[in-house]
Length: 412
Ligand code: SF4
Image (cartoon, rainbow, N blue to C red; front, side):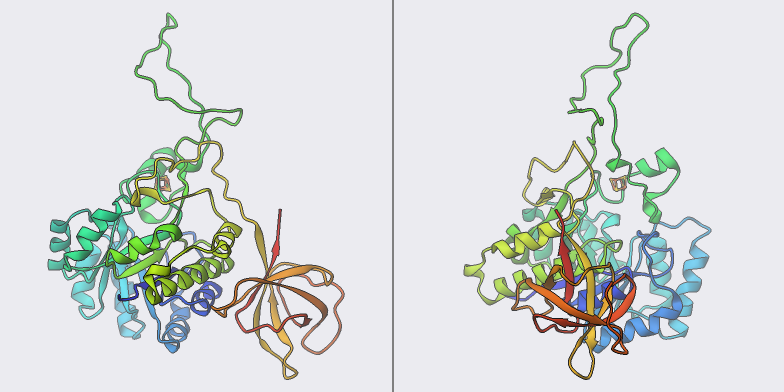
């Protein structure tokens, strides 16, 4: 069986490093504002040379998302961006696009660069696959609304490469068809600016006639408490339990959602799915989900999980809260070692020396393990009593640490 590509999101350089260190085969990123995470840090033109070098040095792939549905005023901007990328030879391994106008523009300006069709376009059937094949598309990201059998049917046509989401946030509505954000606040979901009204709390107020009789029937039933109801709030997708079926469907790539997510989140999700894919490919009969994988996926920011439409699970909403919870917080990342083999930590959140931390190791054969830090110094060797965030320090640790390991703290 062929191992599908594991594709991770990245909103900045630390997420790119986390994805590559923990085993992603490819990353996808946004360039400027023309992608569906307009509020992620994204990458500027001056970052691209380093970005491409970093990804290609590890023999991985990188895709640029250009998947907004642009209005007439944005097409010249996108055209000039693509021309600039071509001129400066800063082209990725593929562009992710959704608008037919952008497809047309890319085919004309950069015919040799593969195009992947975003899930936003909504490619639900084999005729649509054929149509997009004729437009020069290489790969289609299938809608999250398809079930496992439908995915398998489409992948087995072999018309185009197929990609599906395996983990991350879900839309409560059909991908690419939701206008709630634009309706409520004028912010356009198909231009990367969704204010996520599906995560808001609502109160149900029956419409009454002057005489006090209800105006509309039948009623929509909703569970409501003192905070109202989050009746539109979708759970997050997690497919670790059904991964064998997804791999057997024959899709080319398994994609993780979340270009707004932290490097810590990316590391934990990529590590778990890397281990799961490798285990299944090595020995499909022995695939089981060990507790460590469940614990790791439960430790990062998430809403309650669902397998979504893939298995037709009924409970895909969470009506009492839309808040994501997490059981751990990043403390720092190992950036390398000093001459005496002392690990150098890029500190993200302050910590104290007497704390027991946990290591999220880059080594695939290791699961998270506890570590204590007995001494911290700056890079000149001066001892530090207090370790604040956003500084680089050297540490004496109870366990040996590798470049790319993440230190994290468990929170209740
Ligand atoms: S409002 Fe919710 S369902 Fe609609 S596009 Fe935004 S995130 Fe998706």
